[in-house]
Image 1 (cartoon, rainbow, N blue to C red):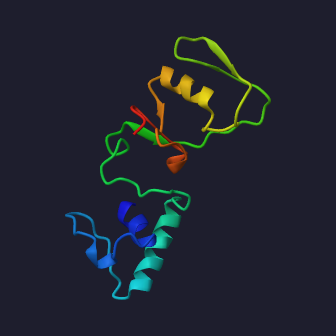
Image 2: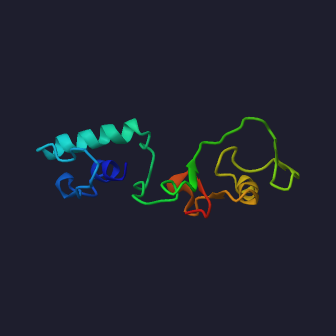
Length: 129
């Protein structure tokens, strides 16, 4: 995922991707444009079209300490319980995972919204990284 995003966004040349034991992906197709198109196809297949930053090689995801999730609601008020069982009503702000009140509720469970905000909207982890 990391290298496909980097190649697709022209941040690294396909032939510069380091070989890695057990990874049988042909990054360099002998033609830079073909390699970039193949990487773009991979990025799209993984659903990473909207990412503003390359997925990390080592991350909270690979450690099992992060999740990407899209959150949205259409009701006027969202009522949700925090970790202590207290019901919280979210009445203000955006009605999606970028809502700051929702972030506070997530934190009560030890799930922290990505600290760099809109750069990775669906990302939540054990420490916000």
